[in-house]
Amino acid sequence: MSPPSAPLRPHPDRLLPTDPAVRALARRLYASVRALPILSPHGHVDPRLLVDDAAFPDPATLLVTPDHYITRLLHASGVTLAELGVGQGPLTERQARAAWRRLCEHWQVFRGTPVRYWLESELAEIFGVTERPDSANADRLYDRIAERLAEGAFRPRALFDRFGIEVLATTDDPCDDLAAHRALAADPAFRGRVVPTFRPDRYLEPAEAGWAAAVARLGEAADEDTTTYPGYLRALESRRRYFVAHGATSADHSHPDVRTDPLDPATAARIHATALAGTATAAECTAFRRHMLLEMARMSCEDGLVMTLHPGIRRNHHTPTLHRFGPDTGHDIPVRVEFTDALRPLLERYGTAPGFQLILFTVDESVLSREIAPLAGFYPSVFAGAPWWFLDAPDAIRRARRAVTETAGFTRTSGFVDDTRAFCSVPARHDMSRRLDCGLLAELVAEHRLDEDEAFATARDLVDAIPRKAFKL
Image (cartoon, rainbow, N blue to C red; front, side, top):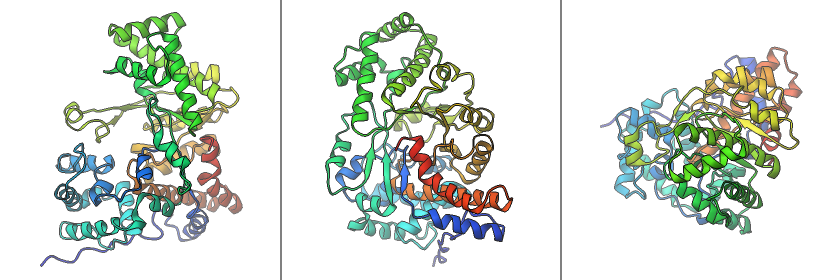
């Protein structure tokens, strides 16, 4: 007979400071913001989830397969992505149950990680699970969660309301017709706000396979001749306006670096033509992309979209995995990135332009205090983005907050971004951020660096006013 499973009871004071006096204040600060609506200005939840409002098919499809935070660490522990259902489309009941078992059998590999924190919060607070997952109870937990998912209270829209989400931003291709967003905006039964985000990366990278075909699709969507450089620019401008008309407030960019070196129009047009012909050199393609990032800033000054930069990731590090399972399957790896000189051409032109807003994210901690905080502490357009991806963990968030605050304060930051495809992790991630910020504010009060009333006001601003301003919500 198997031994009983350990209890799963997330502690009410988790992530708060350990000093009793400081913890008491942190509790009160957290209580003041715990139930505030969630503003999620950057993420990857598919809006069709809320349009269809269909029951989630099974626990693995909801909680395991789409979450590369989970799948990458299981893969590192010897579980194949095929076993987890990655890249396989809809799962059969047998496949879903097998993927769930792999998670439960390897629960110990998540000890000390933010993934463990999120999963415990999701299981306990959304589904009422009271046992720590393990190999013995895997099937029992699967059945319990599957029963819940069949109930109306666990459909996407009901959970959206239960999570307290006020704004949810998605990430969308410039050629997307945004039909899902139109449907949600026109549906009187849906009370939330779901906004698209303009993500033009593939159209700015001539070195990527399929660029010419993508540019042709862009022309069709915008009804412009993108075989010419001026037509290509007009097409991007047109699609940006289309997104603005459908509620978008930001444009998101993720490239290996953030250099913004300008090209003269004739050179840009020449490289555009040779890239369409497939004869541009690697150096020319890189120069074009860097120039186009500068052009994106120009367009943001004109149409008002907040420009967000998420650089410094080597995408699809393991080519065999890319070929078999596709992108966004857990093998994107951080690289070093430089901001100060790279962004100077952009900031020389637009850094003080009225209405222009630029949010800088990084997975390279070293640049937070050295480059990003000083930039945000001078330029009225620049905001320091929240710790993202490999840095959205408790200790890294604490370090980032301290590194930025001492130079740029709280108001020059972005507010938290959950950056997730895993819908049920949205409230857990925001709750983690609120607890950590309240802990830091309590410490500042204890050190007599902040008055208590200021701490309460700042706690609320970090959840509400600051992300509204940074993302023009």
